[in-house]
Length: 256
Image 1 (cartoon, rainbow, N blue to C red):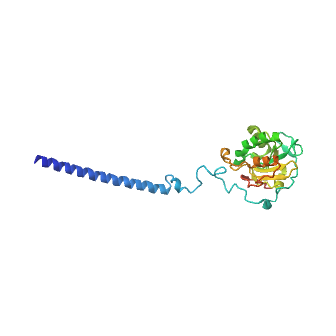
Image 2 (cartoon, rainbow, N blue to C red):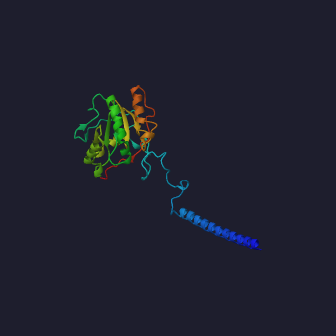
Image 3 (cartoon, rainbow, N blue to C red):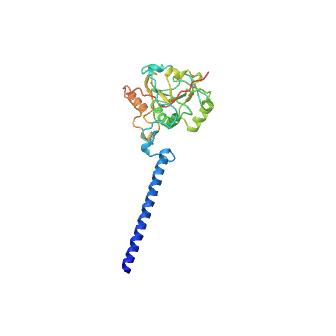
């Protein structure tokens, strides 16, 4: 009889434990469902598969966020500036060191990397080191960078004093010119910063567009459009491609 009593007690205890575990499991499941519900309400970040914005890393070609597409939307014909093969008019613009610079004033030039850029645009900032490297490599070969700020000086951060400071801080090795009166950039058809116009020795436009194929990450660049265009000219060939869409901020015209 003692053995039977002990057996009954063990069976009763086991049943109690099983019921307790079942109740705890139900409670855990309810909490899990509640947490998932909260996730969908936005109280916790969604899974990557549920993201509605751009993915991390990878294919982005410029800085994150910002309004509108950074890519040039108009064709050369719609812009109304220079086309491939046109002869660019010379200019005489004030440099950050106070001197006046024209294309004719640059000795032994075999071509010119005329680049419209500025102080504040994130894309221009991303390309500053690459412009310095481009000038350091190709100016000795006869293809100097000539940078022009097309933006209105109504924004003090794009004014002459700010340009001088930017050039000094970054150690620009090329002229950084003021487009006073904003007369030059419309002639060229510059619509973004940066926007490159590669000219040959006769000032004929040989390439128009972006510097390379990845604004965000210089380490991930696969095609160096400007370098390839210069190398083609050095071989007596026509650049191919000779046009790409510029990537950057729209040029800021004067409100007056």
